Amino acid sequence: MSIKTLFIVSLFVLNLSANERIISLSPSLTEILFALEKKESIVATSSYSLHPQEAKKLPIIGGYQNPNLEKILSYLPTLVVGQKHNQALLDKLKHFNIQTLSLELKTLDDIKNSIATLAQATNSSQDKQLITNINNALKQNSKTNEPHSVMIVYGLREDLRRATYIAGHNIFFEDIIHACGHTNAYTQNIFGQPSLSYENIIATNPEQIIILHSLATEANVDVKKALENWYALPTKASKNKKISIVDEDYLHIPSHRVALTIERLCREMND
Image (cartoon, rainbow, N blue to C red; front, side, top):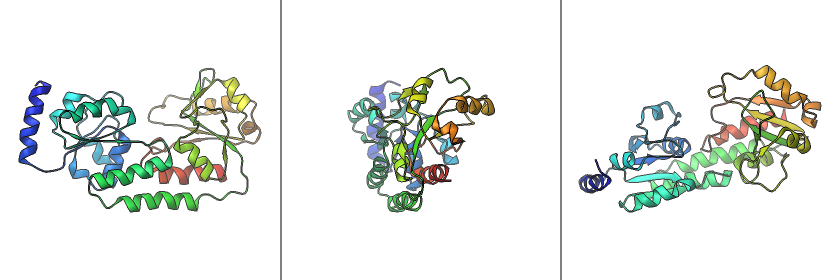
C-alpha cells in the first residue's frame, strides 16, 4: 500500500472514530506511557521496548534510530511520540495531519518535564505521582559524609585498549552523581557520552568507578577478568578499592524508573 493510499484510508478511519491511537518511538517513552495508564491506547512502538511485560506484545515500527514511516501510517495513529532525534520523521507525519510530540530525556529535569507534557497530551493524571517518586528519591538519597569524584562507565568489557564511553555533562547520570553528593570525575567540556582511551581514564584519575553492565547484551564478558583489568589501571579508584559493576535492567532508561536508578547509584556511591 502506498503512502498516499495509507493517508486517504487513515483520514477515513480517523473520521469514524475518535479513539486515541498512540505510537511510541522509543522504549523510554513506551515505559512512561504505560506508567501514565495509557496501555490501551498504545498501538505500536519501537524495538527493545521491554518494560513492562505487556510492551513486548506490541507491534514494532522499526528501531530506535530508524522507525519506518509506512509502518507507522499503517497503524493509523492519532499521536506519535518521539524524541528530538526523531524530529525529521515527526515533521513528515505532520503532513498527514497526525499529532506529534517531540520530547527531551537527557537530564532529570527533562525527564520530569516530559512526563508532565506527555500526561497533558494524553489526558492522564498519573504524572504527579511519577514525578513525586523521582523527587522523593533525590531527597532520600542525597546524604554523604565522603564526597568524591565518580566516573560512570557504559558497558563492561575485557579489552580496555578500545575507547570507553562514560557519562559526561548535561545528562541524567551526572545529575544523579551531583544529587548523591559527589562530583563527576570527567571535567572536560563535552556533553553526553564522551569516549576515553585508557590513558585518558588514568589521567582523569577518578576516585570511584561504577561500570554499568548489562548481562543481556554482554553475556560473553568474563566479569572477573574485566574487573581485574580495571583494577590494573593506576587510578585513585583502584587504590581505594572503589571499582564496581552494577547490572540492573532500568539503569540506561530515562523514564519514570530513573527513581530506581537514583536509589541504586546513590547506594553504590555512598556505601
